[in-house]
Image (cartoon, rainbow, N blue to C red):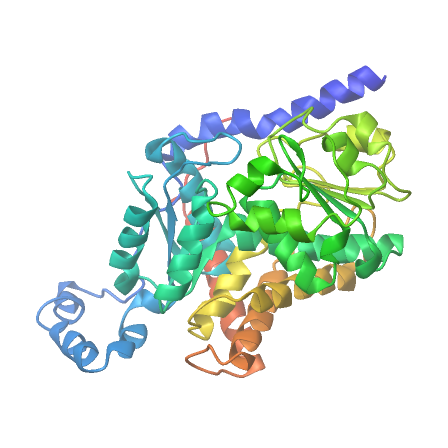
Length: 449
């Protein structure tokens, strides 16, 4: 019976990939551009294009910030990638990475009401990427960096955040960190373990887990209680290989210096032993994390296996090994710890106050609102964060983020809480209603089975 059930579970897990190969060529992509202004007849083009368009151009030239009032810049995000670290596929090139960036843009629109555009760059040079993003700045209200390999992703993000006056966000860092923090807050609440007493093993020391650790620490996890490991083993002060690379990857070396107060050394298995929560952002599995390792964790253990497209350990294997709460990055299992719960609402709130950047404190505000939304619904071992179809989470996130930006003095405009909520609700509902209407009227056709 166990073998039959496992076979069925594997078939279910593999179905999205099969459907993707059928539906991507049918639709020839996932997004398109449609008008948002009235076009009663061809005379209207005299307003939207020449000669009428010259007037708003001249006004923006005199008052540059009016670009937010006269164009769609206020609601646009560029999804930019060099496609050197796409999902669990690695460096697959800009053409092969385009379906992922299109998918990201689709989620931006449907979940957050944000107009996002996929831009895959044909360069791996960090200076060229920085230059390209700066060139694009006039056309966008925000930048979402995506699937850029470490350690250059840290350098690119830090440079652009310092040198740009629009928000720049790396979803693999800040987005993942926000959702994992929300999940950790609620999971630890369920098992009755305070944040400042939890011992956390982190499998993977790339962009995601470094950022997750940073945000978890701000939320209340003690850095000394984090045991982080990369492919060569646990991070500790005697890792000479990492000390040699400290100028190239300073974030990772700082984890060697400031985490792991026990002074643990050894393998991934040694990192996981006796920890309360294991957060994996590593090589896709299954098998990256072994069942026998999970069985050595503390009582009421929590496992976040976030690798995509396949988690480091299958959820049923972690459960068999004794884990109480299990989360993955996939929507077809309970407890989806996925960026899709974060970036649409976070950017909605950021854009609605025209924030100059996205701070870690804004991410924390989003994480706590995510956690509170799930708590309001009713927490359980299989429900620690909202699901994507709990669409009220996105306007709630937007409000929390926008208010935090205002309180930090980085918002160009200061709408009220109610205005922020009403705007987010209106834009998100409009995006969903348009999609449903296009489907109902046949402009988005039903694919054959």
